[in-house]
Length: 232
Image (cartoon, rainbow, N blue to C red; front, side, top):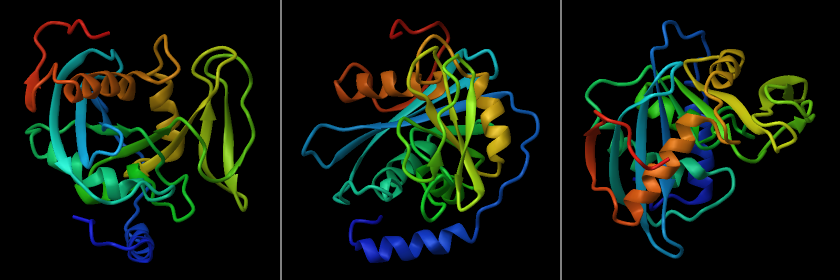
């Protein structure tokens, strides 16, 4: 999809896509998804997965898995060009879409407001949230040390996201709106997704399931979950 793009092409597309950002409050969230990618080092095969959970109960209801070949390099600030095509392929497997999708990366907390969560959200016309493990952009002020503490992340005075502490005395995660949701609402939603780990449940479960897919323990396709999986 983007394999023939140069970084100049990718930058131009990000600027173009950013004009389609819509940040607005999302109503009636009953299901939430987590999306993640896994790959073997030096391989062009991307293993992609989207898990669907009840919200706010965080009960796994279904997941979809698919692989995708890409030659687009890993470059900071351009994650969407590697991951979005694979995730869109998985998205096609899901007949009843979740209310919001959390991606392992940034949304508008990005130099061009076009992290992987915003990129996917625009391409899929879907409400999305970015939940990144590291900060890419903005002036970060660390939150308090206790669980649920948060602090704004700003760039030139504009609030683009939040650093959120998900465990006492642990590194925060970085929350921002992707598309069709505000960063304030994204923060409120993600607070309800915190379990016993640093990574909130939607992307944590997606990571576990995608790794099992990559190692051959799960097969591609759409899977309904009738009983709890023994993965966690």
